[in-house]
Image (cartoon, rainbow, N blue to C red; front, side, top):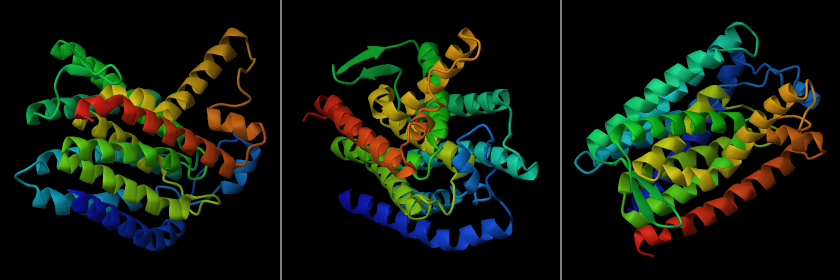
Length: 330
């Protein structure tokens, strides 16, 4: 298993980097540039026109890994590996439609919030039902740190799972606002799932997590500040789907609370900002939301935001591992 995890990481990293040298010039020639919101940080306007939809780099790399190992493990988990990738891919397709709409209309508005929500909800329900069918998910809710399992009625669990997935996917998407940030924050998340899968002997889940780790590391080669490409909603929604896929395929969705603490903080900052703005008729709780823009307004460079947020994510990945150790007999 360890060898396959290393191979999965290596393939994904190499393919992602190789694709970067091909895809970025192609996106430039297609004029697939990012539009920057005028109400965002003024210094981000210089990023206008930077190629977007770079998420295709690690999506294609993970497709290569998925095909190779789904065939290799066809009698021992290949189906769930394929299901995890397809689930994340469908979210990536939703993101692509959003990106394409923005580029076509040369603006920052793609699909409506309601359209995104309904599409994401349908995909979430379908994935949870598929994992139940394949036997990789139970309606019993594992609670980290206290190492107990709470049985839930099927319908209640399905509703809970669907909204956790939609919320998580959009939180990951919201974190993608500073060069390299969502990749840096998600790398410790992938490392956690590699370790958890390895401890529990879940080969294909570990392979999937390793391919995500390799893809994100390869993407950072081009996305680290100053970014040569952005992943766009194509990449960030795929990434959110991949994070959820790993949590549910390992049957521990509640781990997303400590593990995804940065995603949650970003989302809460946005919610608090909107509610406070409405309650006070125009005042702002943060200098700007989501949270990474607040710290930029406080004078932090993009590299500092990347370093601090990624470090926080790493710390909470370690804490999360401590929270599930007893489940694996360690």
